[in-house]
Amino acid sequence: MSRPVLTIACALLLVACSGRDSDAAVQAQTAPGAPMPPAAEVVNGTPAGQRIETDVRVLADDAMAGRETGTPGFDLAAEHVASRFAESGLQPAGDDGGWFQRVPLVRAVADPAAATLSVSRNGRTIALRPSDQFLPLPDFNAAEAEITAPAVFVGQAIHAPELGHDDFAGVELQGRIAIVFGGAPRSFEANPQAHYASLGTKIEAVVARGAVGLVLVNTVDDEAGMPWTRSVAQAGRPSMRLRDADNRPIDAPAQLRVSARVAATAADLVFADGPQTASQLFDAARAGTLKPFALPGTLTLRTRTRIDTLESRNVLGVLPGRDAARASESIVHTAHLDHIGTGAPVDGDAIYNGALDNALGVAILIEAARTMAEGDPAPARSTLFAALTAEEQGLLGAEWLARHPPAAAGRFVANLNIDMPILTAPTRDIVAIGSEHSTLAAAITQAAGEVGVEVSPDPFPEEVAFVRSDQYAFVRAGIPALYLDAGVAPANDNQDPKIAATWFLRNCYHQPCDQVDLPIQYGDAARMAQVVVALTRIVGDAEAPPRWNDGDFFGSRFGGRSTR
Image (cartoon, rainbow, N blue to C red; front, side, top):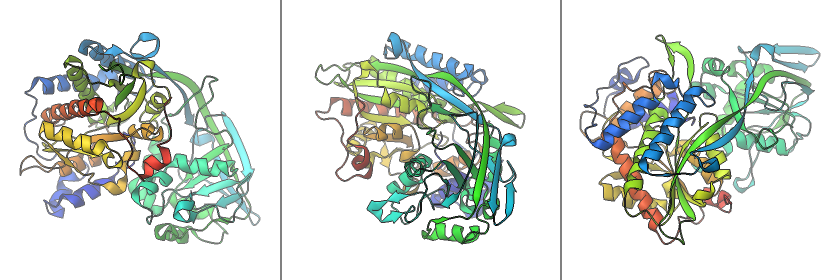
C-alpha cells in the first residue's frame, strides 16, 4: 500500500480514537519493537478461511522475495494467482487470450552522489549537501540534466478558483524553478484538500505555468510523519512510470527538467536572503496564509538518473454476465499483488514479505472469485477480477487497466478495491471507504446486512484514504468505486482492533515483520469475501449501474470521463 495515511502520525490518531486504554497502556502496546497486542486464536476453521490462509502463505513466502514489481518474485506470485483463477472457473481476460495484461513501465533511480543543488544570491553561492540536506528526484526522460534559473516560491502550488485560492497570483513561472511546499490548507474540506495535496496535481499546476524545475521543500510538520532519515533510506529504491507505445514515460513531463526534495533543516538555505524565513513560512503554511514571491538570484540543479524499461503484468480473470443486455458492463474487483521486495535487514531479515500488504487482499479476491464462479447463476453484469502490479509505485497497474479495459470486460461501471485489511483482531464490522460518494452506499449496506455484519464509517475521514489506493485510478476515470477495509468494532471485550492496527502500522508496515506469523483472523477474511460476493450480486443484477451522487466532489470533477 502506498497511501501516506499509513504513518506514525496516523497511528497516533488511531490510538487517540480507541478510548479503551490509558495512554500509558496504549503506548506500551504500540511502541516500536513492542510485542503484538494479545489476539484471540486465529479463526481459520472454515474451508474458506483455510483457502485464504493457504494463498497468503504462498504469496508471502520468502520464495516470492517481497513481490517487487518487475522481479521474478512478482512473476511467480502472478503465476500463482493465474492458476487460482483458472481453478475457480473464471475465463482469462488478459492479452492474447491469456491471464496476463502487459503493463509497460519506465524505471528510474536517481544518484544522490552525482547531484548538486546550489543557491546563488547577492554574490555568494550556497551548496546543499546531497542526502544530508537534499535528495534528487528521478528523471524519467534524461539520464543527465542540469539547469540554472531564477526561482519562485508558489506556496503549495494550488490553483483552486472554486475555493478562492491561488498560489500563483502575481508571479511568473515561465522558464523558472518552482519552490513548493507539500500539502493543502487545513481550511479546505477533506476531499479537495486530498486532491490538491497530491504531488501529481502540483506537478500539473507548475508545468501548466511553464516551470522548468521543481524543488519540494519539507516542513517540520512533513517530517513529523515522514522523517528525513526514512526518505534517505528509501532514496535508492526505483521509481516507475507507465510508458507509451513509443517508449516514452507517461505522466512525467519532459518540460520539468530537474526536481529535488529539500530537508526541513535546510529550508533556510533555499530561502536565504528572501523576504521570509523558513520558520515564518512554516507558520504561514499552518495558518493557510502562504503568499507567492520571487526569490533573488538563481538556483542550479544537476541530476543523474539510471533509466531502463521493463514490463510487468496484471492478472485478469472474468466471469461473464448472464444477461445479454448487461454483460457488456462489468464490476471490476482489484487488489494489488506487488509489495516492496527486499531492503535493509531488520533483525537479520531483508525480505519484506507483505502478508497483510497485500497478500491477504489478493487471497480474499481469489476466494470471492471462486465463490462467484461456482455460484449459479452468474450476475447479469460481468465481473472482472484483477490482481494488479505497481500499486506501490503509484497505482500504475490500476491506471493501465482503467485506461485499457479488456474487451472481455466491456465497460467498467463500478470498482471494488481491497488493500491491506489489517485483520489482526476479531471484528464484527467492515469499513467501506468512499461509498458515500455514490449509490454504492446503499448496495454495501444491503450486502453487509445479508452477511450479518455492520458497516462502520471511515474512522479517519480527514485522511481521505479514498484517494490513496488503486480505486483512485478508477475514480479518475469517472467510475464509482469503494475501498473495502477491515472493521474497527471489536468482537470481544479483550481486544481493540484499532490498537492492533496501530501496532501494525507503527511496527510492521513496509517492514519485514509484515509476514504470516501475525495473528491474521482468517475467519474475518472469509467473511469479507462473502461481503464482496453479496455486493457484486446486488450491483451486478441492478437495473441501473451505480452513479455518483449529485454534487459529489469526485463525481463533479471526474464523472464525465469514460474508459471507452
